[in-house]
Length: 415
Image (cartoon, rainbow, N blue to C red; front, side, top):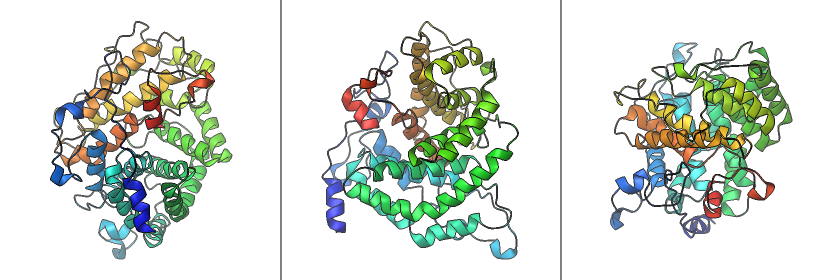
């Protein structure tokens, strides 16, 4: 059965690579993207290691990262000397990639590319890595860690949001047919006990949260709320969906004139203004969102220009805090696209939003393969989220929803 399972993987058709973007601010299918220009042809003797397109490079980064225990930054409440342990003994699944949340979204990256058939040549290696980590015993260890004293706020909300993104991905894959759907369901079933702990924590925490958290780093609430909502819709969890939507409206419905000119701060990897807008397009109708956006970000150009929002600059990519700005470029890119797709088709701001997304996405994607582990251990996940349009939740073009100029083949690749 296992041999047949992997044979099905390797027989899949290679998905053609998307370039970063076209000259008109839209993504296209040419071979002129950054990695297509940057990387030399693969060595036939080393197929599994040589990237052919960005997805290969991103998968390789994650595969090299998820079980790399050191260096490691632990956010760990110790209740006794017994809990002075190495990371793999504390959190047996998500101990690599420098910290817990990066390990989680490294696993999400691999699941995303595997489920999308984006790197079929690497399917067997990816599936083997996920199977090795997604075991009942290891996940029980994660649950035990979460249930330890003093850990109610562990990885809240950023890491929790990425974990739900991982299980949402598995749910979407398992809803399909074939060997991958069956395998995704197996992994999902094993992860369900940890998912239950995490969703219960979120449902306990959000009602008590009196104010939004408007930072540009891990604790930001708008980014996490967006991923919570995406999970809730995939999971048909109406309680979570209503909870997050209601709290988002309480926090942000009346927000006006967000100070975008004050961004980014020197260590941001999330835009407080743009992530809030990316959240609100999930809870408002298109017409309501367009009106809200006019008051919230009144200075979005209508001339299609791209330079109205300067890209973040990183002066030292080896500095773990300064390199956050490479991430802000990528997260801005996906937020700008999300905002644009939620506006009515005739809205004159769409072109400038997409042009700025192209500018930021290009800049961010060029940074992903930095030789410095401070950035490389997490930037590939951000690039994959943007590149595969994970948060856009596009509707079929037949339903008269906005279309960004992609071909049908490209749309199919990113669903």
